[in-house]
Image (cartoon, rainbow, N blue to C red; front, side, top):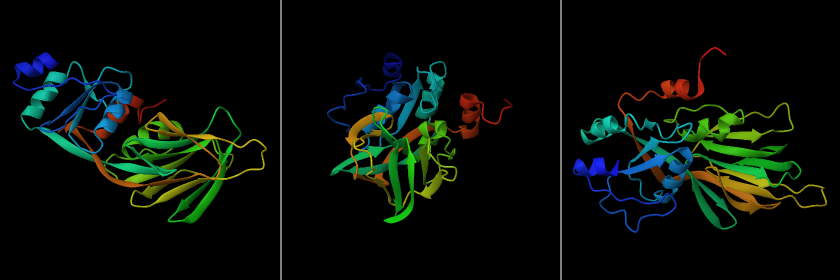
Length: 253
């Protein structure tokens, strides 16, 4: 691909998915080759500088990396002819223990090493919504709603929506259901103390990657970030066609 782009008169720079380039000046496009996991890693590298991104799928699902190797040249010719459309997605900011993280897809809080159920209180604007006992909870962007959120029974959100879904993981309840909230809202998750002698630990994961261990009484604050992720799509991109292709959405079982 790099050779073909050079033949087109384009300058290229190859980097590993774990190493951010020393400078992003004069860079017009980020091309990720791999699966959705690789795409999310690269998105983290460029989170403070929203250079338009394209994902070439060499993985399995390819929901974020939607351009196949066979259609790669056709797609880039459309990009060069300015026949691609820019899509903008807000990242969410996660604050915990004086640390700040950013997520493009989702944030999850889960029990650590098969410990007992977590007791989690969900607050909106510092007012309690509910307390649940569950394996954990997922807070997902609209773009990430078809990832872990979907697997846990959460709703599918069109990626153009400015929402966050809150989906409990295996809640010990018949009444608690996923919520869809405006991404302008501040959501706080508090890990409550329980009567168990052993203090329960939990894991904070961002976009499928474990970031830190949480303890009882920790508070995790989730809000909309000022950072955005920019992706390029074909003008004929149809979200529901992708759902049908990847998940057999709307098909008879």
